[in-house]
Image (cartoon, rainbow, N blue to C red; front, side, top):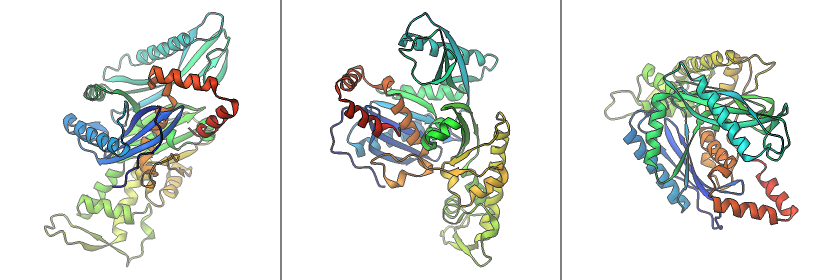
Length: 427
């Protein structure tokens, strides 16, 4: 399997592992976070075991796979990760934007005020869970602030104001899944472990600045789950997860055509299309029938494959439409499709017919030193997880390195600072 070669460059930042806990694969990126820029050092991918529909079904089996993919990625990087970021899609995730108002004293806004603002948002989030004993909070992440009624302030520290509000992304999940994640954290007791909602990571990876600002809905079709994430004004507004995805398509093909799952996945990937009527009658594909002990492939009309695939895709898109209809009305819905399931040819046209809006098919933002093999929609979550870690570098960076970075920023000449900001702007 192609891996990313270690860079022969000095490493002064915090080394992290960003991992997509996908239901069909575990994908791990090892990167250095140095002054707000991620630098890929290594990567690895492994078949996921111990997961179903994004939920952990066998903790021992899953933790073994997780250790293995991290070890392989660290070997390719030539360095161990200090912080581990896990992007999780199970647990029936749900997210919303909350507002927390904070009384402040006259004077400049300080770090302690921001801490109180986040505490207020967490209290509001936990209060909203009363009466839902089977739900727990996954995380509350600051989105933006309102200072004296002015919305969209990203960092209000130092600003003189009379009133401060924090708008934060609150994501909840099932209590059972939360306990599984807590148990997983204990396994990595020698690392600082952070957990992120995978749909939010996917949105960070594929949306450009205008889409985040003006508004977009990211539909990530994974193996066992399909997420619908609404982003407006650079903030996550709503998040929902549908327990169906690309693996459902594969199982439907295998079941209805009487072929092996491996054969079904192969013909779906190589010969699939969203419309059944595009295949000529004479066109055939090679398949392996169930119970065929010698695994001798047989020919089958491609049209039979597509007659199974199209209604299966329509079923997923119909569930997506239900989620979209539940969102607050808007003059238009800018849709962005990503994830491995979005790679089926013609899905954008079929989606336009069912959702009444044609989506943009998106791959994750390019990162330096990332092999072409991984620059696909199927790897959006991992890239987004790394970008999220980069945005929160101040949280995870060791205090000594943070002081060193701040000293550099003070001593650097204006041209040096401008160059750093220009290079890191895309992140």
